[in-house]
Length: 127
Image (cartoon, rainbow, N blue to C red; front, side, top):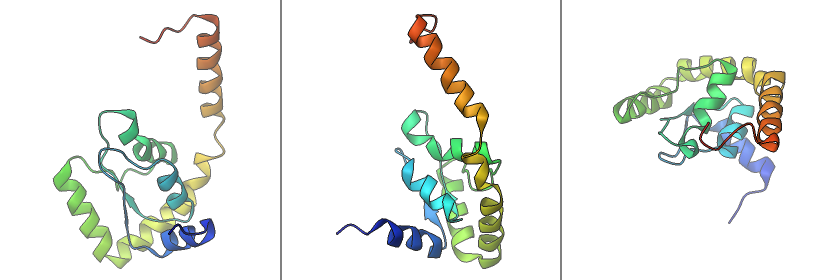
């Protein structure tokens, strides 16, 4: 059965490490986990569905839990899963920087620019 939202966030907050699902990464899941400082390990894929977590980490300026390949993904998962000191450091770093994800005029300006260009026909789907 599904969890009430507040309980789901509490689970993220108590988790040692959250593993971003491979091939189709978490958008809402990752964002909510980061909001409570959860350590999320991700392996970005080629397409948008597998790149949300990396984008969130890029925005907040944290790259430590972004894996380079499948072996690195497993290594990072074990490292953060077993190392309480690393978990604490990463959790504090994420909580210190998470506001950048929500208080970022650059993102609003980029969406505005893109939507105006699309509406005027100046931006093709191939761009």
